[in-house]
Length: 293
Image (cartoon, rainbow, N blue to C red; front, side):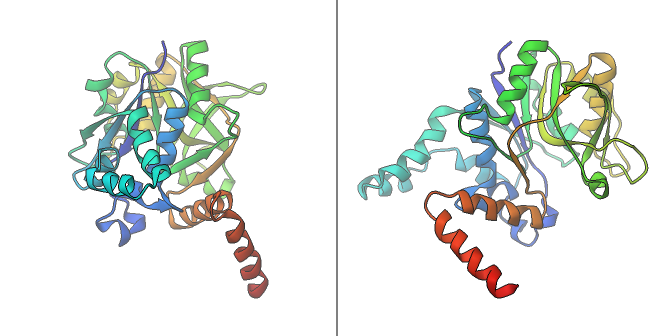
């Protein structure tokens, strides 16, 4: 079955980015001149997925507004003849339908995904965490498109993984795999940010998943953790036991914008690639590094 829907959870409190995120959703923080969430939305569009389900909190209305019509701004751009800017705003709206669902309590990623069940129904769906930015080559499928293709070929849920440095294991969801060959591999179990020594696995989740309806009974079956949150990784362990999950690596660049350092690194990397300011920014970096070192 072709994937018709993608889910982006956008209801977190973004405590790591306070005080900026007191009034601005983390998803709207700019990476150069584009909100962070737009990179994931464009990834979805490149995968020919026509519907996006936002799981939003009560202070995230600006995320919803971003994908709505802005009559005054569009009229000003039209009158000024700035058609490139105008078309860039309208193009996203034309190419994807956005549905917003309110997550009334911040009860973890698992709970956020479960909030989408009434809209997803029995269909398979893609799940993207927008603070994990995946940039592939223009001629290659987007990261989530690679996973939807693998799902279509196998009929199994599929997640993307990468090798985590030993000292960073506690920062990521970690999966234990039945390794052998070049992949894809079968997932045995998943842990949410395990403490050092809890697992020997170094396979971390990259925030890209494709699930089908079988994930929802697993989400309803899990219990909250010590912080009162429902973890997607617990549901993934159940799903792996009951129906199987595949894991694969992806080709392309990944930027972890969950914290300040990763966010700054993403800004630098995307600024270097920017068609308008990239060359000048690279020259600035060379000069700045020469002065510093």
